[in-house]
Image (cartoon, rainbow, N blue to C red; front, side):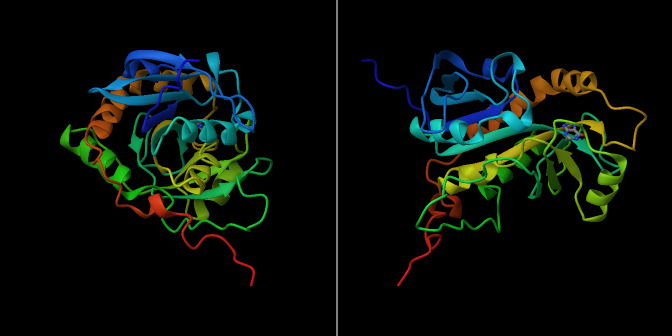
Length: 265
Ligand code: HPA
């Protein structure tokens, strides 16, 4: 039997990003949670790197039907220790415009129906998300953008809604008043599941539209249009970030389960 290809770094995002990798092959990795989409494993500067298309082949899975547990479990199985994700988001702040890039520092979960954890059984496990996103990957994404003259917003709170419908104007007003800056449907539970398996995770978001109520109408067409336009910039940033990852992980993501399990006496 052929040995499963391995990679320490993975990109999760929309279609098109697999082209970031050289000499790629596709693998299928079964998990106790189901079968994730085919994972592409290739190289960036000779380092094995994986790509997982969150919405499946040909963008068939809506955000609330993505099998986040299968995706993160499968990446863990192939040896992934670091994930750099991308998400399309709407902006709830007038100064953040379509086409802008944002590296959020925190998140508020407004999802309703998703399976949120790998730890349904004893020992009861509560992971710490004081710093949900890996500080090392965040710093590299921000630093590499600045080094290349790409404008980037380095602090923002991402609200994750259930979807698949867009938000109502009243919901957007509520999210803004609560202190959220950008809104998307795919940030949760992906980031938390990665933390639960001690995988570093950060995301680069691109603003595809102003949130509901801030522009006349909202269509999926414009989301896809901005994604296409920003693809080369995001690809380049991902490559540079992955190239500069230090060999050793010194962040707390790597030991997230220390002190997380409830010990009955
Ligand atoms: N709301 C939720 N998800 C999104 C949006 C939005 O405005 N734009 C892109 N993904």
